[in-house]
Length: 219
Ligand code: ADP
Ligand code: ADP
Ligand code: ZN
Image: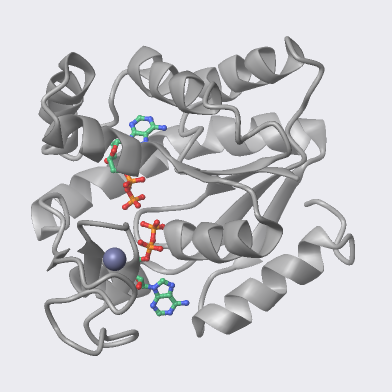
């Protein structure tokens, strides 16, 4: 299974990607996580990426692509993968297809998680992330046992720098500006699936499994 998870910030891409990746025993590849990690380590890529991320802008396609290519090269993605937050532009989608085609592969499905703006704001404002293992929590919907520590690894939980009102507004604008051509691209290929991302995590997960098992035809 080679999936790409699309959807606005806070839709639950990371949460769902992580769940499915564990079940299928394939890697979750999050460009956001990879870029944040690079920024923390002050690599050249990370330092450049940060300038965009802290303003809520997409990083340049070339930078996002380089990040994914590097990660895919690690070898564990040969049996499949779940891309989380990539592609985000049509140009990235084209580049991804070219990269996969060079080894005789192609994307199985592009899954869009759809939720309303009000829910986005609620989800993002309560998001907490483990600095150590990347696990996701929500202050209200999925609180950790200890407000500051990860249930799984005891790592420190933090609130993302870009999860503030102004930056979120910009990220939503960026999403709205780029998403149509991306949807169109995957619709034309017949692999776009739209999933209702509202309701509890388990419900969304089941909807995804149903759709992927071929119950629903791609939108
Ligand atoms: P969210 O989970 O809220 O959707 P991400 O963690 O996926 O956010 O992304 C955070 C930031 O990282 C984005 O606002 C953008 O600056 C950058 N980013 C992540 N993925 C991409 C991508 N595919 N193309 C361009 N920028 C990206
Ligand atoms: P994305 O990767 O699309 O930005 P996340 O998976 O990081 O989204 O989810 C954003 C926040 O919402 C996190 O705090 C997460 O715990 C929470 N969340 C994810 N899915 C749900 C859901 N179905 N119901 C309630 N909260 C959720
Ligand atoms: Zn953790």
